Length: 565
Ligand SMILES: Nc1ncnc2c1ncn2[C@@H]1O[C@H](COP(=O)(O)OP(=O)(O)O)[C@@H](O)[C@H]1O
Ligand SMILES: [Mg+2]
Image (tube, rainbow, N blue to C red; front, top):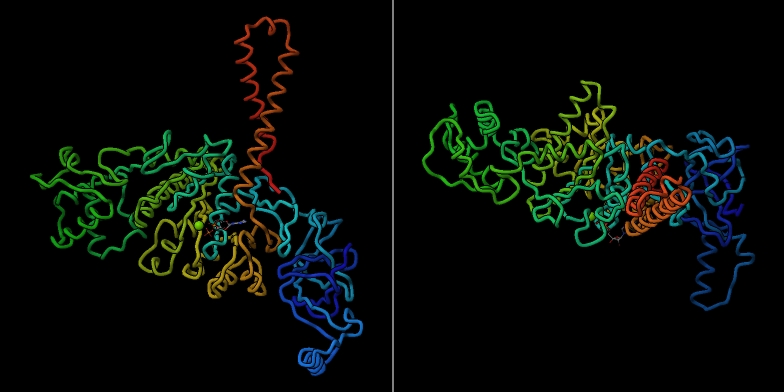
């Protein structure tokens, strides 16, 4: 045990340790102390100087040294001057490091504290459905200990990723999506306004060994991927909640159109079909707004006042995602894929923010409706958790937006967990999200946050007491994070790996697995019976291929998680 300091005074929550001369303790560093037979896990949250010499004397000595260039030295400097570290006690580790409980005691007075070691953390048990977040970090040191959380629970009870730009939100999100691609317990719907996750021109989800589980929609898709088209008849009036704000009269007109024309309501608005009780002005504005929001054109001409005809439909031309003539099954297909635990990435980079949110709103409403009905039927347990990745979350979860009315994302934030539907909300400005919603996001992966009010909003709504961690969060470097969650025993400092490394690691692992299962195929062929030896060469090749495939599948079942670290 390398001693790093000694407990010399303090109180619960503020244990003062004198640092050993020559050792450094960083902000956020984890340290191990002793309390009787148990160990105490502590974390540094503040640092200061201490000296046996009075301040006045120190000032005088400094003056003599600097001003008179005197080569004055301290007598036994390592005894007289030192650094002090303020620690908070986080957990008591018991039972040969196999159990940990929240800390209710102080470490022994005058006991030594030392570096945390991997073997001190044996109480981290492997979750049933592991989702790896990164490695345990102590200050800026990274430990060889993978931190995995219970993936299905964490995803269904929402994840918030708050951080200043450039601190690694996208990198973290890439790693997490990657780690879920081969998992049966969850699916991800990724609304991607920067087109950065599929990896069209760089490393991305397309490079995953199980890339067949990744479905990519885009306006101009690469070969083999889907063009995003959504039929107008799939859009319902309430899909616009959170997308655009309407006057009361406009909302009522939309409802009246829907009531009368059902799924053809947008066509009815566009061709001025009859609906009673609204001023022409209102209907005109509604029509213009829909045309511009949906990015469509209509070829005006003689049409009847009532009923939407096929002729009307043919006059609508699509300039973007929404179309009168195609995309009937897109939403159904997407949600079908999600139900099969696939990852669906939608490149929304070519669209305005409102169109992106409208697309998200249509699909999310379908997800929640289906999962609600599965719950009623009792079949929800067999379905994967669906997590919806949302950039710039305050666009739909912000106080200002919600004051004008709720939307599907706020509904999911409030009650999605009952229906195995969660949000993965990314933001630079968590303070814009109402406290109640922040508090509902039961896991927060906090990367560096520069602005104090943003830090405060996260600290105030964290699952663990982070009131002493303000400085610690401010000083987080790229990829350094603190995870606070209802599903972790303490606020875990971690280092998110660089996405490139995660890709390399799982591709290597995949190649290794294929190699070994390939060898098994060869071997079994060599040991085959006379009958199988009698088979033609072509056949036996086909056989061994089938075998390799079956083997590599078996491997995957045995080792459900890609582990790194
Ligand atoms: N875990 C990490 N380790 C090391 N460097 C990182 C890590 N995450 C991000 N970075 C660096 O920071 C840059 C910005 O990261 P990015 O994920 O795009 O941030 P954000 O999405 O928050 O703006 C990346 O290009 C990368 O070089
Ligand atoms: Mg980003």
